[in-house]
Length: 408
Image (spheres, rainbow, N blue to C red):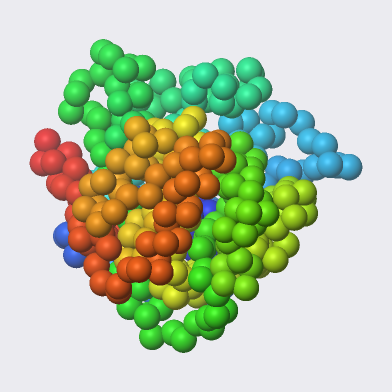
């Protein structure tokens, strides 16, 4: 049984692809998925076109859920207890009821739940305990750190859920080695076998479909960032400063180069920075497009951009796997010692282009080298080991964990 809030047709989280790939590929490894998710009214953004077609051995059931901030707020305010541990806590009682119906009917062997919706782990814990079956807790991100959540009361709640989850579950799964190591240090008394690593990845079928799509080209060299830009964790100020310097020096020409920001979110902030650094001719901000079109755009771009702060060294952006599968050079503005740089090294990259996100001087040097390499490069395999990061391969790793628990 897969307990996942983020599931198609939601269109506001890259995490949807992790649960979707499990439902899609687990049957290949002898497992029949039962998906317990939320009713789509709980999603701020959804597209019916995002609904995948699963085989007959995949069962999807939805439990009623509300978004406290949208459904229960009066004049923009709502009681805090209605959003503890998160805005979708209303999903909990309905998911328990629906989940128990599924358990009585289908007799699952494993419960798997995925964060970052904390309520999912609360549901997973209850269902596994009621059904007396093993529970695998999946952490796509760390639940707590020294400054998150920022509100002390919410942090205490998250710490309690996190501690109970690690204590009660049979396996804890992470998507990056740095997060796994952080939790291993945080809970030193936990048995070593409990810690497991299952990376994110890319869907080969999506790329095969995208390769048949003709995407328009701009006539300029396009460096593409696909996805959300955060003012803290993915702050583009250093990059914009470097671009502004290069533009003033004549080292970069808007008639030949375009930095394209696809669906960056925080649009007011991004547009303000573009205006502040006078980059209106160099930087274009584009609206969101369907996932398959976004993948097609990666395939037609000249280069791909990663933004990741040093504070996120224990995380790996999910899109980096799609970038590597696209076999386009990646400019990674991230700490060379972090997990993001580490996964690029594992890819067997022909050449690495790395600079600290907050260093305009480093970025200017590396960006110039990156652009020159695009002019001189020939097409071909840029990341020889990219196929090891397919979602099908990673689901196989998780299926192995399920097999081990089912036998025990």
